[in-house]
Amino acid sequence: MKKTNHLKIGRKTIRIESKGLENLANSLGKEFNEVCDSLLKTKGKIVTLGVGKSGHIAKKISATLSSTGSPSNFINAAEALHGDIGGINRADKIIIFSHSGESKEIIDLIPYLKNVGCDFFSITGSKKSTIATSSNKNIDTGISEEACPLDLAPTTSTTASLALGDAIAVALLEAKQFKTDDFAKSHPGGKLGKRLILRVEDIMKKGKELPIVSPIDSLAKTLIEISSKGLGSALVVEKSKLKGIFTDGDLRRAINNNTDLSTTQISKVMSTKVKTILCSDLAIQAIEIMQKSKIYSLVAINNQGQPVGILRMHDLIEAGLV
Image (cartoon, rainbow, N blue to C red; front, side, top):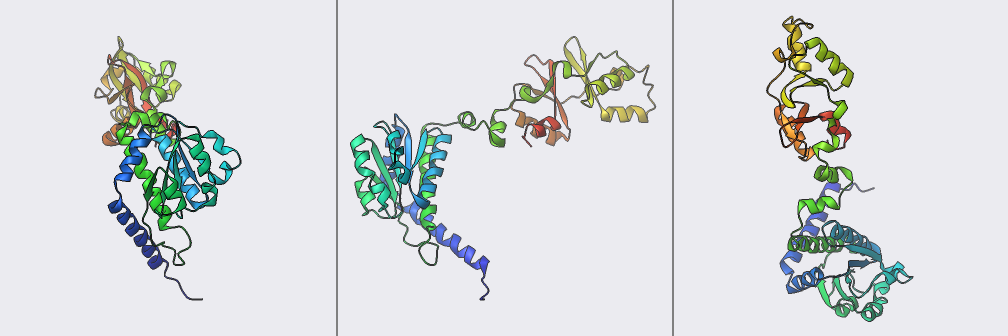
């Protein structure tokens, strides 16, 4: 068996697809603007249609549109012929993905789309194809060479279709002035969603969970409070005001100095320089503060500067933010 240079083939494939994308970027014309302008006026939803490999691309683009402020559904063209097409109405806009532009399943749907009266656009590899000429607007990928040496497996063509779909989604996103907060609303799950939504107050330890002592309390009493709450530190509070914090590091220093546990007031051995964060801040901001200060916990305060919680690196890890 002939030894294959996988690296050489991989690089060649990527270069062919990259060249195809470069040509596509240079050839985009006014039809791209016209399609985006029309999609912006959609009163219903944006429906993506495709079959086979183009169907996979259409499904991905539908998901991207929905997550960036443009409600969208994907319909497999083959399944549409058996009932799914009923989900399309006049207020919707359709984007058809078909490299050949001659997919029979899609061509069979065109009379129905015209009868419904919805606008439908296509992304194809041939301006002269049946689907392209039947559409209200067509965007041609201009792909003449697949990366597949047999020129059979969709490679460069599907990459171009994917890039065009993404380009449409991003154009609509910017036109709608879609912001980070908007993105967060449609991504509540997973690490990304949590980073954009979870606030310090959502995961901090608070209320009865907090180890709190008075500045005049003894070091011994403070240790009992720390042990009972299990957070590894105690807040030193007087009249709702944060005076300091006592941590494991402070305890080590006290022991090294032979400090008397029963007679020494905690105010004498606590740390007065306390790193804090607003309880209303995004929890992800706490990670930056902890990393920069090389600490593992922060005191959460409210708008009046009163201590209301403790946020530990452990809490951030448990929340899936790290």
